[in-house]
Image (tube, rainbow, N blue to C red; front, side, top):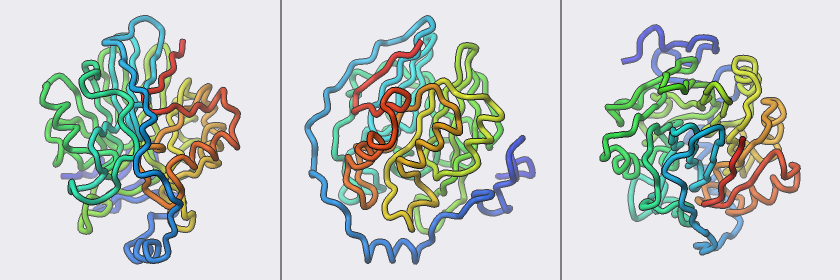
Length: 315
């Protein structure tokens, strides 16, 4: 049950009306009839059915010392390895981002790390309940080992009973690392009947050496300034760039690459890495158009676009 504490996390605006969550100081997500209008008028750009261009990588079991190793597995699944801790964001290895196995968005590229090569996972961060971010088959496989801590936003313990549930502004300490739940501007639903009943979020991962920001899935908004004011400029920001067309429908829930570049500058991130692209075609732009658009509007050094399986090491 949600209680009075849950009507607005410490230090952030109120975002719960007693029944449903909402985006403060921002447009709300489009409704059902907007979705129908989009689908009736949608003209998606063509993309290959499947691209066999992934060169899988095999991460080390652990990374010690000052090095932060970041591996893009696929979509919004990122493996962060630092000081012996392995953190995985929004893990998905399923063939479809869908509640059913025979319909829904099908993966267009393989994961960049095979399941057999995945190192032990200490912490799993889930940003919200959409099927391309909360993939139950993958989470069940991770949970079967019994060694992973799951951190989720409010309301998702119904799906993941063993998880630690956080509101915006809440934190949990795991060893020498603090995980902070921070705002995202998005929405939640896994059916027609549960819209915005659970929270959505990003995470700030703070250690004595650095701050890493995982934005989850988000539209552009004032929350980037809030996060910088509270935590300072992150050394690394993981920012979504895909599923943005048509803008009349998607702008309230997803950033286009140009908006992601604005977010990068507002955050003052030393390095940003693009997520939420290249694996599932969820909207009208083609599978690799987000990457092309980002490279056209951002200098390559501070805003990186990794292929599935690509990694970078940061001191």
